[in-house]
Amino acid sequence: MAVSENIKLTGVSIGALLLGLALPYLHFLASPKLATFIGDFPIPDYPLAYPFFRNPTTTTNATNASTAAEASPPEAPPFVCDSLHNYRTELVSLDPLIIYIHNLISPTEIKSLLDTAEPLFAPSTVTKHGRKQNTNDRTSSSAGLPRDDATVKCVLGRARNFMGTMLRDGWDEMGAPQLVRYKKGERFNIHHDWFNNPLWANDGSDRRWNRVASFFAILQDNCTGGETHFPFAKAIAPPSPIGEPLWGGSHDDQVQKGVEEVKPLWREHEDGGLAFRPVAGNAIFWINLHPNGTGDLRTNHAGLPLDDGLKTAMNIWPRRYYAYE
Ligand SMILES: *[C@@H]1O[C@H](CO)[C@@H](O)[C@H](O)[C@H]1NC(C)=O
Ligand SMILES: *[C@@H]1O[C@H](CO)[C@@H](O)[C@H](O)[C@H]1NC(C)=O
Ligand SMILES: *[C@@H]1O[C@H](CO)[C@@H](O)[C@H](O)[C@H]1NC(C)=O
Image (cartoon, rainbow, N blue to C red):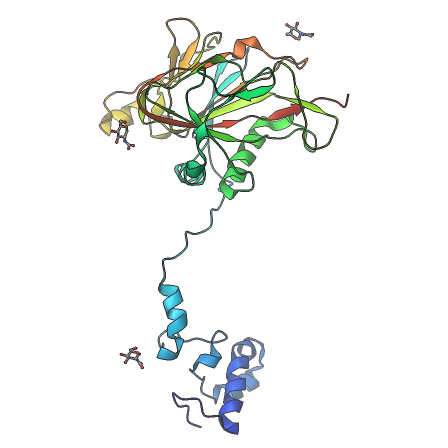
């Protein structure tokens, strides 16, 4: 039985076609005897066999439509959350608790978050007297992040795990994450992240909540200035002696690689407290609320003005919900 390039609608060629369609399945299921029987039939190479069978080495013009579709620019592969992503914590202050997190967010995640947020940036607001307002205290722009985005979910999941038992599953939540961007001269004057009066839940429940903790993760650090200053923080140890290169090797490794200056990641500020310089991928984590649920004034902090360049960061504000009232 000959197989031609053209489809002949004879009984024989239709029989061969049906067999051709079934062949890929029969091939795996068939007994050796049957397989031999099937093996006696050539595998048809015409379009109707596609997509059940396709020999990649013999593309005919009849499949031009599908090859054209394949030739169009490939879609970016879907984001895959790296469940083995590794970060390292540096305990900075015990009371209030401040933890520096090295490598909380990977470069791939940063790129994806920025791509998502780029069209969403708008001038930042602050909540004063229970209302959102634009203010000179905060000259920056912000972008709310969609919580159903794969990368956002991935990073929030990591932050949620970091919180451990401080959040109660099914009761507390990670809140709405936000990107914030500062340019030359822009700043955020001293403020605290917690609300003076807990906010009502907008999920229909009779609950109120406050920001129990904060993650401030740097995504873009192309700037001078722009440190985050906690005037009331007290360090329990000097900055990590190998500083920034924690994830790039020891100080000696860095020097060998030609890194000239290994700047510490945070320092004691001349006006008191601690100042953290922006380093992409790294985050500051702190606890905002006292055990009795009131805000801790010692978490007051400022985003110091940028001398130049650009700083983009991600705010994550996990929420503690209080009991029904
Ligand atoms: C496919 O089509 C192109 C032009 O559309 C033609 O040049 C080429 O020879 C054809 N190839 C086959 C295998 O028919
Ligand atoms: C809550 O706890 C803090 C820290 O212990 C304390 O300073 C504050 O007075 C307490 N507030 C209330 C309302 O109990
Ligand atoms: C970093 O910022 C400077 C000053 O704004 C600019 O000239 C430079 O192109 C920026 N570099 C990158 C990689 O964004």
